[in-house]
Image 1 (cartoon, helix red, strand yellow):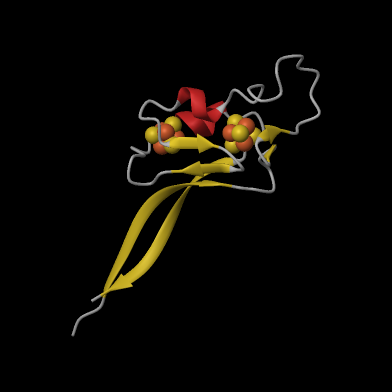
Image 2 (image 1 turned 135 degrees about the vertical axis):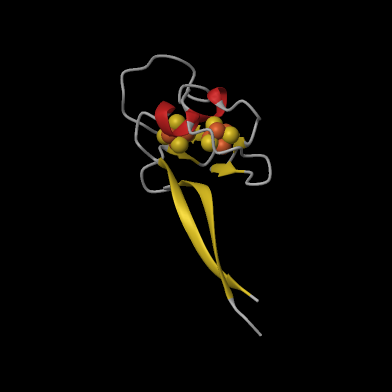
Length: 89
Ligand code: SF4
Ligand code: SF4
């Protein structure tokens, strides 16, 4: 049996850097907008609605097209594109 090294790109949210916690934005900026919608970065720019912001921010990898818009939009550099390496046979 031959093992094959698989490499896939995925979008990852760093929960330490992300200020969306328990359903609201907890950053300490001076923004006066409604705290339930003030973190306007990632979810709003996603062209395929792959991002949900409920208790925390989650990316639906089946929907994500790896466009990178959310990476550029996040004011806290909490989103990045990473490589997942796995072995299949
Ligand atoms: S824009 Fe960044 S900080 Fe805001 S919810 Fe998205 S990942 Fe978190
Ligand atoms: S990379 Fe693009 S498609 Fe994927 S979650 Fe971010 S904005 Fe949406």
